[in-house]
Image (cartoon, rainbow, N blue to C red; front, side, top):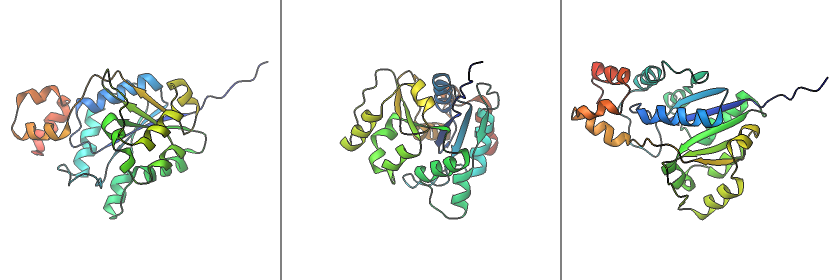
Length: 223
């Protein structure tokens, strides 16, 4: 009788301000879920990001919008993780590396922890707090529009990224230290522009925000 090979558990992490939650967030989650086939999708709304100005929606509103946007999600189990919000409420800074360390401690050393980020975030990765340590805690996956070129501003980041480049299957098997780029994401939404359009009641915004989320935004007059 042959030995059964235990597959590595895989958790996909998608963080963000979610101010507001829009169709780009859902498209990104779906795109990477189909690519990586994770056992769990963990959404982590930011507390108060140190690289951004004050958020418009409250933490409670952003969590509510996430729940509505992903209400019909069936691709895999989903968890909304409020650890960064909790740290902000305690007036503690939240850095991605700390969030991933906390997840690593909770999920154990063997889980494939995959942190999803946008192409714009990759360009600024060298400005992140202890960015090199990210590779020692998680795998990093970038989603970009078709035709995206890996034109990274920092040579140090580019070197680290290229040395660790692998495919989705390899990434699923490794707990941390791998990188990959998915260039099939066709949706690109600017949250800043979206907030402006919502304030101006632009009807085209109905195409960029899940309808349940838009109803919630209007009911609570958030933007």
